[in-house]
Image (cartoon, rainbow, N blue to C red; front, top):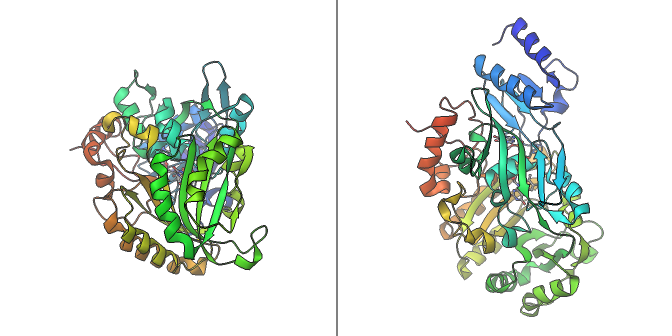
Length: 461
Ligand SMILES: Cc1cc2nc3c(=O)[nH]c(=O)nc-3n(C[C@H](O)[C@H](O)[C@H](O)COP(=O)(O)OP(=O)(O)OC[C@H]3O[C@@H](n4cnc5c(N)ncnc54)[C@H](O)[C@@H]3O)c2cc1C
């Protein structure tokens, strides 16, 4: 453990704050999005600039501390924190600068996707991020990033132009296709393994008003809806980001009271373009299935659909995640999904299938570390409930559900939908042929595995 003198010197070197267990704000500062995770770091370095990050990386390395990197703090297993070590907390680094001429946006590592949507929307632009606006851009991007704009514009990493990075030795580099190209390749899906990213430069795209929202059916129609969605997706225009899910009708207004708490199937979409075109785009699916219990698709500003589900998922709920990449969805798999979803122990539990097609498939498999470009969906099963005493039931349900459907799926999963209890070999399976190259990059940029609080890639021997 560092001496008092070393701790004092570190605190004095920071423009931001060094928070320790005796500080009054310690409990608030260590709290993560997932209330199931209760980690107690020895130090939280609230960095405000790159110099702070360099000081923190140097302190962590020289003192032999376990080091975690925190962007938005949304990670399922809480990989933005650690016990007894140092958290490099970037949450105060929030600058966003839009360049409308080049349609690019420079984003500091503490931003949420909502921060970026807020900044780009007045310019009629957006970057493809996820579907909940409180999610951190840093962790989401480094893991890959899927959302409504993915079918048309690719994964978040497909829109990454460059990243500023503080490496394990405390040096600073900018990585892009031309500068440190191997590091840049690895950052595009390889997670937080290679250094602390302090800012990202993204390509943005014209996105203004969208035709978007959820359509819900009761579980009795889930089979018909999932089958129809499976056939519809490859025919749908790429401007339509659309995923299918198994859920429960939330027992609250404005949901129809007669259906509160009933099992349901939902298709949730955003069409980037005029409402009339959006209606036309979703019509073939709606024609192929029974009438929904409600269809709340309508015109709205893009940031509105991005934050539509935020109120259901405030910070501090219990979350247990399982994921898989899915190539095809045979009828037997649909049956297994519906049977498992029916056993959910809580109304917030869900299963979503996010499309991996369109622009994602147009990027070569080896072009980024993110490898599973021939999947059709990224599946997430999330057991969610406000009550800590439900934690075991959520885990039990999530594991049983995953076990029942995994035989229909590919071996790997999106790293951002994994907990910390995956079987050996899951991370390797996820990166497939890219794993060996990732291990080489890791050896070059972080040979001692300083950055190991993540879905870890071991440095090549
Ligand atoms: C409600 C909810 C909705 C979600 N929806 C989506 C979605 O639609 N699409 C999608 O793709 N994902 C989605 N996710 C998953 C999300 O991508 C992950 O939870 C991701 O880890 C969040 O990033 P963060 O910065 O908030 O996490 P943190 O917990 O802060 O960090 C997570 C990991 O990222 C690494 N990391 C973070 N910041 C940095 C950095 N600056 N430099 C280097 N490494 C860093 C760390 O190693 C850490 O292991 C969702 C998650 C939640 C909770």
